[in-house]
Structure formats: C-alpha cells, structure tokens
Image (cartoon, rainbow, N blue to C red; front, side):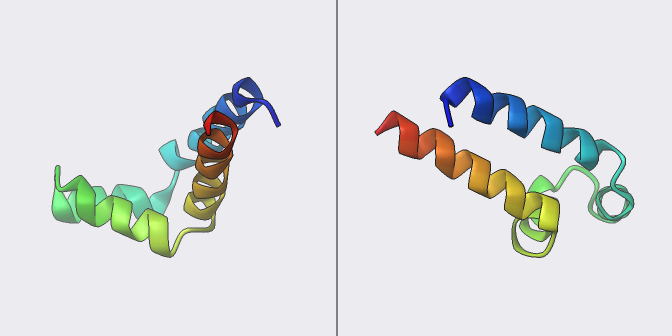
Length: 63
C-alpha cells in the first residue's frame, strides 16, 4: 500500500469518528481533555484500531 493510499484510507476512516455517539458523549463529559477521548478510541474502539493499523502502514513505508 502506498503512502497516498494509506492517507486516503485514514481520511475515510475518520469520517466515522465525526458521527460516533461514544466520542460525542466523552466530549461532553471531559470537555477539551482529548487524552481521555483518544485513550478510549485507541484502546477500545474498533475504528481506532483501524486507524492505528493505517498509521503503522505510513511508518512502515517511510522507513
């Protein structure tokens, strides 16, 4: 997968985050403390897992 394809894939995946009810709820609870929201997304959310995989593709292609 090329870097450009990975960036497009990340963009497509991030569209799901905008309509995520859990992310919206966490944003209401924690306000602008994104570390708590991102912690949930990175550890528990399946969409966050997909983002991490695509990010690894970017790093892998770069090295």
